[in-house]
Image 1 (cartoon, rainbow, N blue to C red):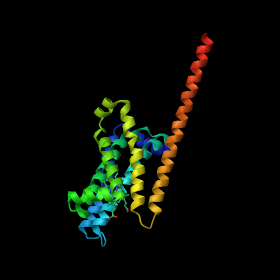
Image 2 (cartoon, rainbow, N blue to C red):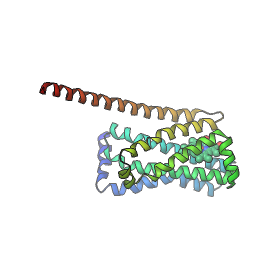
Image 3 (tube, rainbow, N blue to C red):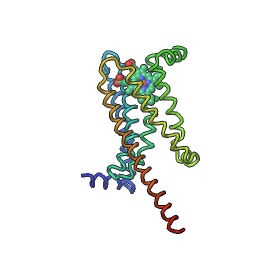
Image 4 (tube, rainbow, N blue to C red):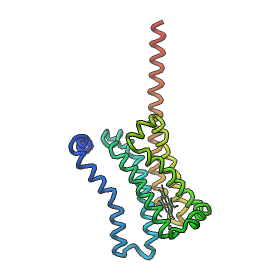
Length: 224
Ligand code: HEM
């Protein structure tokens, strides 16, 4: 099964990639299409505005976790070409976050700038959500190949912000929930597993580096 999956996705490095990429793109638009359809059919329940804001917030967070899952999935299942979908996933995070923010300033604050600023200052969970959105902006701006080349090593450093953003987004979720903590707890556990994998990988890399330094030192000692 893993072999078939690996083969299928790796085939995308060739001509299949031209088909897979638009399909993935359409997949990312499905939550928005379903939400739009529900709105048109008046089937968003008694509080449609709240449902729209919440659904868009949920999808932003799911895609954020999706971005973090790409590197572990890539090495666990040995599917190198998955990396091609990381930028697209990241840009969809920004797209859904922007819609979530837009829905909030439209349906909850009716574009009243004064009220929006007051709310960001007064309600900590709104302030944190806004912080997440602001932090996403430099990541979206620097997502191009050109920016990647221009920033060099700093690109990776800057894009590590995604961990902070996810942590803050989970906090934003926990702070707004009043009773049912199941979903934020489940998402936090997933985040924990993904972070655990990152730390484990960093540990492995450190050990490899240490043994390389030891080897070099032994070689130098033998040469003397
Ligand atoms: C990366 C950015 C953000 C993420 C990942 C995010 C995520 C979420 C999540 C998961 C929820 C809970 C949805 C649910 O109950 O199922 C939520 C709710 C909410 N978020 Fe955000 N959010 C972000 C940014 C923002 C910003 C910038 C604002 C506004 C300044 C905001 C305002 C709200 C509001 C008002 C709700 C509650 C809706 C309600 O109960 O009526 N969020 N957000």
